[in-house]
Length: 64
Image 1 (cartoon, rainbow, N blue to C red):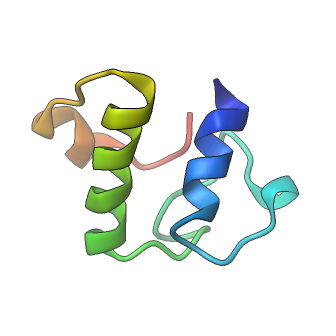
Image 2 (tube, helix red, strand yellow):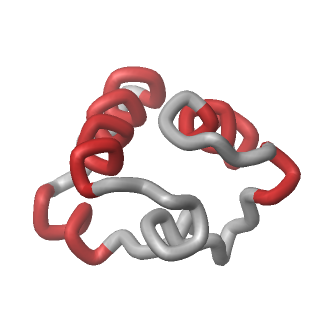
Image 3 (tube, rainbow, N blue to C red):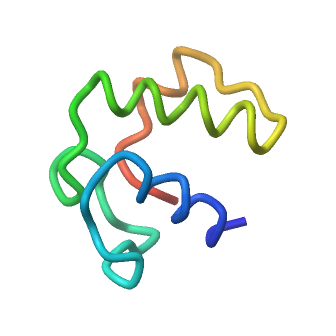
């Protein structure tokens, strides 16, 4: 599942896959904008068939 998430992340930011760690922070470490972050969450919901509640998405700071 982590590998699938890494693939999705790489669709949104220019970062090498090996540089993405579970503790990587989306905005501070990976360079996400808030728009890219919300777009990525939508793709994660579609690709992984999950629903991410908005309250939880606001607290999501890191990959893990």
